[in-house]
Length: 290
Image 1: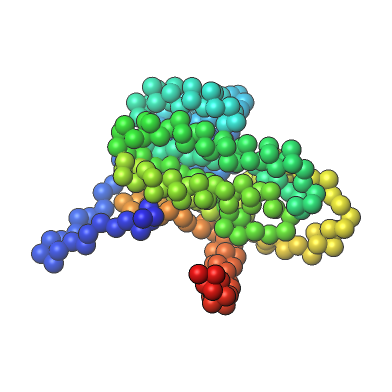
Image 2: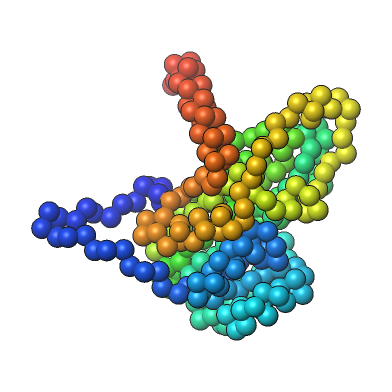
């Protein structure tokens, strides 16, 4: 059973439902906290009184976070592609914080280029960070969460993890793989009291399209396609996405997936409906295979 189908029994007619409890202080492990969405999630958690193990490849990028929040921050140098470094960071965070309540796999970047343009090395590097980096962190954290009998793994996916657009095939491949990995994971760890949520934002106002992006060498054959590409008219702020993440973490029954932002919902929901309709149109022929 998928994690988002689990439901608690309805209260009986003679029992009044309990009011929602105020969120208690939590401990967080956030990858890619130097800027962008990871930074926004770390700041939002800290500002409400939680404690955060914030990771970055360059430890100096976390100096201002430590200066603002002091001992509530555990700064950790981390390259998510290095499994030994990941295990050491998770161990250090657990020792410093006493437990891990929320693990946010946020570290990642965008790869821009058509399928013909991207190189195998570029795609491998994309998967090393966006997929295998998540695997390393998740595998390192799970023994801690299982021993606690609780925890929440938040996977920062993308609307491109459930839909795909021209010029983002490599990036979508990494996020579609993350979606499959995480859906299986949610079913595997539900019995240990561990939740998994895939956060699927549309465009977010970060450096994802700019200095942190990798771009393939362009072939003239695709110039017309690039010129005709749809460019979203706006984007969500990292702070707004972080607010959604905190609300999901606070929920008694958090979702397996959540589309974040108008653009994500407006794009993905019609695509999903069209996908289902296509399966229905060809269902009889497919079933004829027995």
